[in-house]
Every structure is written in C-alpha cells, then in structure tokens.
Length: 476
Image (cartoon, rainbow, N blue to C red; front, side):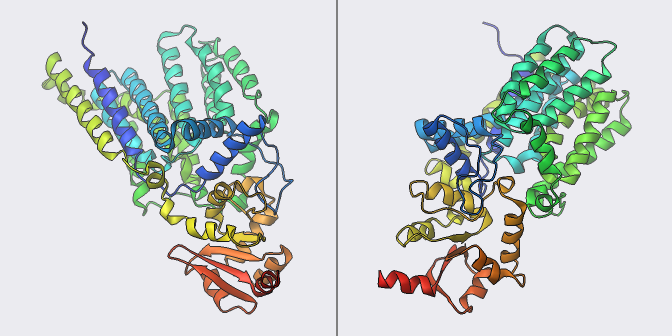
C-alpha cells in the first residue's frame, strides 16, 4: 500500500491547524438572523424579498444574497445540532487553507515553504472565522485560484469547473463578485495565450445571474461597499487598526509580501501583481477584506519565497522517510490541537459568546405586553431568533444594515449617540421599550429621563419602559 507523501501529510496538518484556529470564540452578532432566515426559507419554500423582521422597515427590499448559506446553516443546526454548526465552520476554514496550501505547493514546488506561508495566511485571516456566509467566499476564492494555477501550468478543460463554482458561490455569498473580477483579470491577461477562459468568463457571469436576485446580485456588493454611512459606522468596514492584535497577522503577511517580492529572483507575473495590489487596496480600505488578501497572497508568497530558502534546504535535505515522519508528526499534533480546542459542552454558545447577549432580558420582555422596542444594533440578530415564535415582537434594527433605509440607520445612530433629537426620534418611531447594554450612555441617560422607568437589569442588559405604558398595563 502506497504511503501518503510528505507534502500531502503537511497539507493535511495545515488544514487541521487552520480548523483549530477557527475554534476561537467570537461574539457572533449575525448568526442568529441567518438561522432565522434559513428557517423561514425552509418553512415557506421561498426566499424573502423584503425586511420581514423589523417594524421600522417591513416593506423595504432585502437582497438575500446569502440565502443558500442560511438554508444550509439552519438545516445543519436543526438536523445535526449546534455542535455540528461549529464543526461546519471548522470544516470550511480547514478546506479553504488546505486548498491554499495545495496551490502554494504547486506554485513553489516546496511543501514546507507552502505550509509555513499558509499558516501565516490563516493567522492573518482568523478574525473573520465566525459562523458566517463570508467563509464560503474565502473557500470560493481559494478554489478559483487553485483552478487558475492549474490552468496556467497544465491547460486542459478543468477551467470549466469554474462555471458551477460561480453558480453555487453566487447563491452563498455576494463575495463572488471578487472572484468574478479575478477571473476577468486572468482572462484579459492571458487572452492571447489561453482563449478558453473567455467562454468560461461568459458562462460564469451568466451563472452568477441564476439567483433569486438576478442582476441585483451583481449590483448589490458594489452598492454596499460604496455606501459611506455603512462603511464609516460598522467596524468591519473600517480601515485596519494595526494596534489590534487581531490584525497583526495581516500586517506581517502584507510586509512579508512586499519584502519577498522585492528580493525575489523571479519576475512577478502581471496577474499576481495586480491581484495582490487590488486585494491589498481593498483590505486597507475595509479590514474585512484582509482575509481575501491572505488567501490570495499565500501561493504568490510561496512561489517567490521558495527560491530564497532553497539554498539552505538543499544544503541539508531530509531523506524521504524522515520528511514523511516529520509531516505525519505535525499532522498528529494539529489533530490533537483541534480535538482539544473543540468545545465539549454548549459548543455553539461558547463559540458565539452567547453570554454577551440579552438572553434573560429578551425572555423578560416576552412576559410583558408587546411594544415597539428600540434595541442595540448588535443584539438585533439575536432578538430575531429569540422572538421568532412571537411575531408581535419585532426589532428596531439588526445586523442587516443594507435591509433598512439609510434614514433608519442614521436615526439609530442619532439615538445611540444621544444627539439633540434623540428623544423626538424615540417619539416619532413610537418606541415603548428600550433594550440596551447595561451602563452605556443611553442607558445612563434613560435612568434619569422623566417618563421612563427601568424594569429589568442584569450584568448584560437594561430594559426601560415608558411609564404611561406601565400605567396602561396596570389598568388592563
């Protein structure tokens, strides 16, 4: 029986290590409304086209660009259990960086360099390892670059596999637009040598239209990224803050890419250079795109870095059996690390930081007469899930900022920031209840504002109700 080669064992080790990195807990603000959307799609048999979860914009168009991911998330959660959802996240991350490592190996010819660079890339991307549809875009980009690498080296018809890839990707997450741009770039730069990519690009573009959103699915990601109100108010759309430890990996990868390309003995390919510059630009504009840069940079960095370390490696080559033994040892160590990191109890709660959500406060409100609730933006998704069996309870806003008119989002910010019109805005929206994090400025202000009474408090949340509603409830 043929033994696995050292490179394959090393790639498996890198994939397991990346999967273990995915088991770092996050405060998952959006997972809950993703689950509710998947449940709604499964129950109704159709994809919602309007914002159905809020009272502020119930008829506003909702571009459900992640519908297939949401359906998958809920199906896994419902049929296999919460722990399976955590396992799915780890699987997606592991597959992504396994493919990245494979591509880096094929590009560089050195599995050890490919493995080292891929681990750095996984570390750089780990701040997006949440249970979210965005993970499908990372995997989609990794697969796209693997196919393009194979096509560049060997030709053939594998490039036509990109058509079904884009068909599925476009229904999973709007990040497919980045992949489509990368395919267009590769097609334009290889037009004279490789004409087969033109029909692939055309068919892939048409495949991206086969979604419930049709042409709007192509326009949507461009619209969101150009909406200044969102990009200046939502943290993941900010430019990177390199003081944050979460972004140190991206900083290292970015600087390493510049240094290695400057020292490389190889001439950079135009596609590689333009792809790196384009994704670096996106990442420096919006930190959420740093993960895309990481996926694309690793194979390029490995290709140019391998010749720089080849002299040292060639001076002390490892025998085949030794290389296999080392790679197998690394794979076992990564597997042990993954197994020890996977939570044994309440996996989903631990992975999503459920202790930071208003679990008890949301249940308390269900014991009171329904009213219009002003809620914290980050809690809207959880409340959508917690109140899913009680349609009279709806949210003011949630993490689907694009599913609300900009006026609603702007008014939310005005209330949260206690701008001069904050009380008049609460009146205009007919707010009866405020559910907000304990000790925040808005909560502190409501404690001393006439007409409001705090009816619930714990270490996470405070609930305030208008006194006139309390009096009305007492009469009833």
